[in-house]
Image (tube, rainbow, N blue to C red; front, side):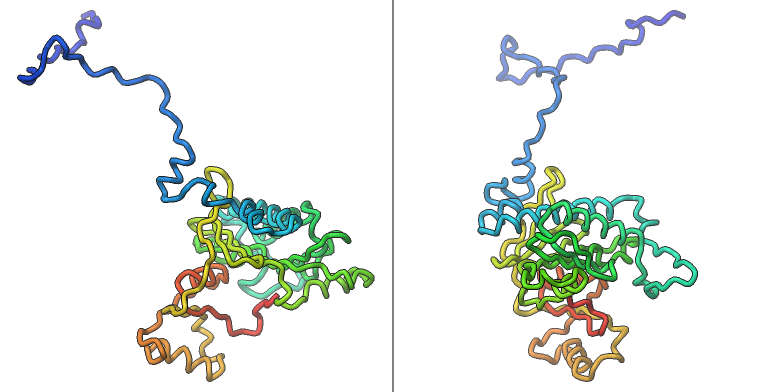
Length: 326
């Protein structure tokens, strides 16, 4: 049997009756669907759909620094830090990070950090990204990283000193728990310029926290959030992945005066001083100044615990000697 297009064509449906008020003469069928490409959604429409205005009222990180009168050298440095953090955010979210987040076996006879604190390829790669960006900025004299045994001298005329943990909480990568980058920025102590490199590198890196020019952290989680203070309040900028820009989303962040969450490693309870034990017991039972019982939330990633505490209030602490105060 030979099939033709007429053989396969289904019977045409009967025309629907027109409403009584219709005029058959003016009735027109609906236009056929357009074959043209759909119009691209403008970025301003996307932002408006999320309840966020365009960059006019929600500036980018660098625009905000310009508006608040931050020094040009500091803006250049922060631009390089944010570029490094974008790369680390992509690295952390990569499907290939599982192997990178496992500690490397120590070579025979080599000294290594103990247990979970042993360096991992992902830590080292993040450290290389940070160091490379800081060096290319031309604004950093010395950087002290948690991944290096000693501060690294980069250049003699850099106006700033940077202290950093390139990837805090990397042990959590395999289970997709938030991680982060921590950094502090100091002015270079020009009065130390005549000292040997190793000595001036260490002394520049061990300045008092009261001398900080800027400090901040970047949270790598369901969103990537860059929180920074440089003398004009603390502000949070969320990475807009459609543009690659950090956009102001948390202006003038302030910790609430009262919270209901405490964040501390309860497994170390019996190592704590008596005063701390009494305080935690009191707030857990709701017998403190605040009548409601506190709840525990502990991620063991400083950035995650600290960020939650700033947003919701409460207390985050690490009562152990190993806390890296720098």
